[in-house]
Length: 402
Ligand code: KDG
Ligand code: MG
Image 1 (tube, rainbow, N blue to C red):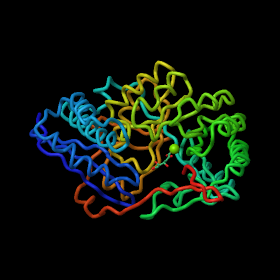
Image 2: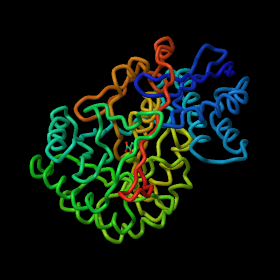
Image 3: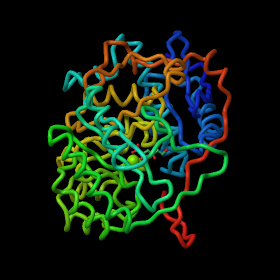
Image 4: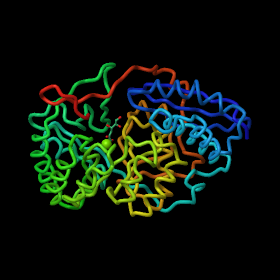
C-alpha cells in the first residue's frame, strides 16, 4: 500500500488544531494530530517542507521504518516540533493499518487489557467555594477522578482557572496574557482547598492537582507533605523537570504520588525519572512524544518500575490525539488514568469520533483505526487564528514558569 498524498489541515473551531492526513493508493487514509499549542505553524512548516516530500511513494505499512527514517534521518533529534511532526505521521499510519485490517488500533497492539478507560475531569473556580461546587458538578456527571484548581487570594490569574466550566482553554490572544505568581500565597492556600473538598465529599472520589511547574523542589516537597492528609491521586508537574535529579529532593519529603511529563517528547526526558522511581505516573503523550511507536517504548520502560501512564489530554490535544491515546490506554498493561478535558461542540463536529463518556470512563467501540475522522469542509470554515499561551511573572516583574 503506497502513500500517494499527505496534507496538513489547520483549523480553528475555537482553538487551533493541526492535522496530518495521509492517503494511499488503495483509497484508505489515516489522520494524526500535530497540534503544538501556541507554536502550531512551526509544526506545519516542518511537516510540509521537510516530512511530506519524504513520505510520497513509501509503503504505508512500514510504520517502524518510517519512524526511524524521520527520527534518525533528520540528523537533528528530538524537540517538540520534530516529535510532534513524527507523531502525526506515526498515528496516521497506525490509523491506516487499523482500517486496512478492519480493527481498532488497540487490537493491533495486542488487544484490550480493560473494558473502559478511567478519566479525570477538570473542576475549577475563582475561589474555594466555586471550586468545591464544581467538584460536586463533576461528581454528579459521574466522574470518579477530578482535578481541582482554584483562584487564590493575592494571585492574579492562578493556573487552571478557566473561562468555561467544561471547556477550559488557556490560550487566548496573539500576544501572551501576563499572570502574576506568588508562591507563599499558593503554598498556604492549596491545603485549605483540598481540606474543604474532602470535608464536603469524603474520600470516595479521586482528586488530582496540577502545580504547573511553579515550585522549586523543596517547595514541592513541602506542598506534597501538606497535601498528604487529603490523599491525592497525584500532584502534577510540581517542579520543572529538565533536571530529573531534582525529583529526588521532592521524594525525600513526601509520599504524595507524582505525575510529570506532558511537555516531554522523548524517552530520554524521563529515563531517570522512571528508572529511579522518582515519579508514579508518566504524562508524556502520543502527539508530543513521537506517536504510538515511541510511547510504546516509554510505557514499556515505565512498566519495569511500576510507573503507570496518565496521558495528557487537555483541549489543545485534538480528538485525533484522544482517539489514538484511548486505543493505547485500552491496551497498555500499566495504565493509570487518562486526562479528559472536553472539547467544544464545534471541535467535536469537525472531528467526528467513536469514543464516548459514560459514568467516569471513556468507551471505545470496534471502529477500525483510531476511530476519529476529520470533516474537511467544516474544518475549512474555521481558519487559523494566532493564539499564545499565557506567561507568569513574580510581583517584582521576574519571569516565572507559567
Ligand atoms: O497547552 C498547555 C496545556 O496543555 C496545559 O497547560 C494543560 O497542564 C495542562 C494539563 O495538565 O492539562
Ligand atoms: Mg498539566
